Length: 74
Image (cartoon, rainbow, N blue to C red; front, side):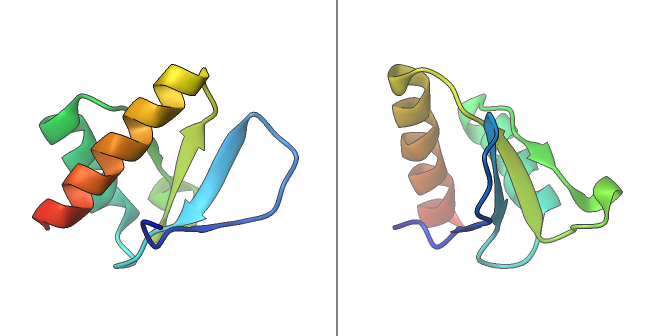
């Protein structure tokens, strides 16, 4: 619903392309505005992506809520 495009995989994280192509900006906004830590992947050759580690149901709900908040504010 947030517009991220996850890459199919079998891992404990999700690699997702971000809507505006700036993973660094989204990762920074999540940390500064919501206290949520995700990894921007520019250093790994994917500047338009983030890595989100899968957590508990509660942590995943917190992430999706924070993501929605950050995307609405940008």
